[in-house]
Length: 303
Image (cartoon, rainbow, N blue to C red):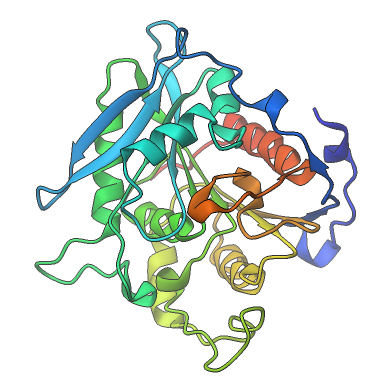
């Protein structure tokens, strides 16, 4: 266990499921990536047919052996359509994220999957009659992975970052999975949230209105334990607190961890999107170890 995992700042008695951690120091990422060579675990490129015939890209790596192995399926942030080569780079650690290889080292099959995007983020998860959404893409990926011969279909966990967290929340309303991690989630369409008009980027979600009826309906169907990770430098933290509180009040198994100085998608680490060079933080590594512990110990409730 990493030493800073023990440095719990506070667990308020009134919010026992919200934990706060220190952090913010940059660490070199080189020692944490490219630790599992492709000669041991080659990348498999998958094209998975979705509900309407669209093929969704995904990149898979597995441990050596026949399994059955537990699985971590990751849905990235930003609207979909990132492309196969971006997914391959992520799962190999090419951009500096240690998350996928760390799970691979721990005996997990790791799948980094794409999904379709769109313009109106507040309505992306809706699936009116005759339409197909990113939720259908995610469901197709999980269904495909469940059937792989080296996979334990009862131990499939999902990890959604940013908009991928919105994808996962909708998905959990359709499928009971082993566990779910929401990394810096943007549950915009799940909550029916509307940003404050004219507000700065840092304030657009403070007190933003949500569609309470829609949120409660979505939460009611969830039967999967959830871990929420968010940094204090992320403007979405206010929306993530709303999500946590609604889940908790509905009796769902949920825990929220707040990391000091964590940028929006700090929990996944450097991703190389849009030419950005995100740092790897000590908080990233702490959140990673916490995620591993959560997934390993999770017990999904019965239907």
